[in-house]
Image (cartoon, rainbow, N blue to C red; front, side):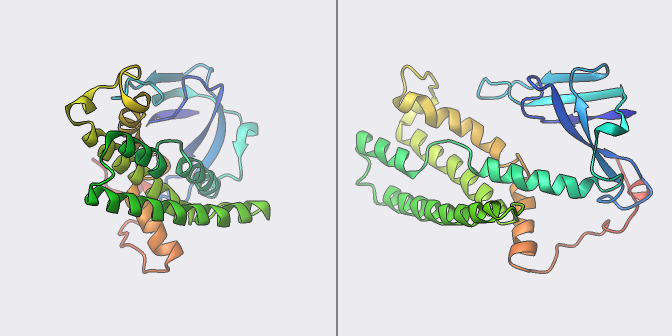
Length: 247
């Protein structure tokens, strides 16, 4: 029997089923005592509330669970081993989010040529940085594709791609909007260059920096699991969940 609430479940208002990570044993540390289930999003007790976003869309949702009954046959993995299932899910999500569509260096270069700002040395330096980062990310994706072709789970290197693409999308769109001067505040796709893709993506990009793990979380993952640096201090690492301070 599930009770609780989660902010930001993408596409929940369209979904017939979801996956749900639950706390099934509060007497062990926070990454233990978790179990994952498949949940019928149409059953009694499940309430989905779409969130109105700055871009005008409603892709994100809050989901409330009130006495929702889930049979054990809908459990994913072993009882108490939900974190292992969640890690596999997150690795694949970060791979997907890292490849999210949006204008890249080629699109803003084309717009800069049209706007007559390619001669701006500061912009050209930014363009070079975006290009180099894009090539590095492309080669990282090749490593991921190789791993997938061998039946392996996407690894922590996908955190690199997500940080690069989300931040660069925001930076590229911000630069394009600045080129448009006071017209940059307009979002009408019929009136703005490139069908206002820079405006729409600028409002969408901050969400990508949260989806699948925030920038700060992913930087810790890269530091610890890719570079092998000492772990961040976690004073509650071995504290039972029900003994943690709250409020």
